[in-house]
Length: 224
Image (tube, rainbow, N blue to C red; front, side, top):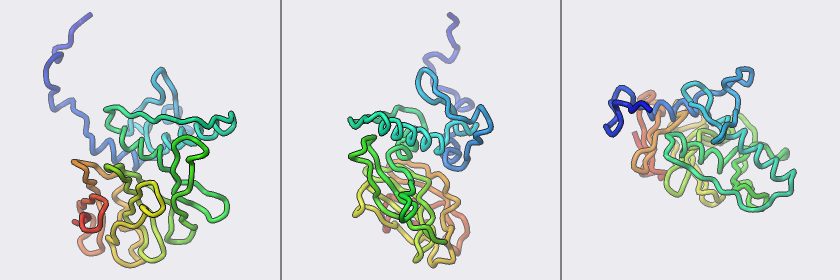
């Protein structure tokens, strides 16, 4: 077996992955079901791919999560489901997408749901009734003990929210672009990059245009 000349040496910068780009593309791009290379495909280690080629994106993880929940319900499986992550650059975003998801209950409309993979612990965290402002939650970003996401309501438009998986621990973090007319205040965030427990993302406060913002999941800790 031929030994790589890079064996035992630090990887040169030219071959390092652009992690912020990977995470951003994970949220930004939606796969095309008509393209075979962009469909969910299981190999020896589950679904593989890269967000750069639209083969490992949030919609893949949401589809897999839904399929697992449907299968378990159909088969009467109600035991624990363990979700593990590794050192893959998209493990944290995928974990957040899998544990928290958006669903329509057929009555009120879209809502934020939590699951541990069992029917007994699959529950709605908060409803987001369909109206011009309460667009469904999306762009989940995992922080220690909480998850940030984008959602909207009639008083502030689409803004930055957080949840710890409970109703009482779910709410808007900050009204970055004040007023309902600014409905897409952080549409440009798409995927935040997390560093040392802080999320960094693009947002527009209506004054400075799209700039780099940061948030630790609290109002005081969210600023330009």
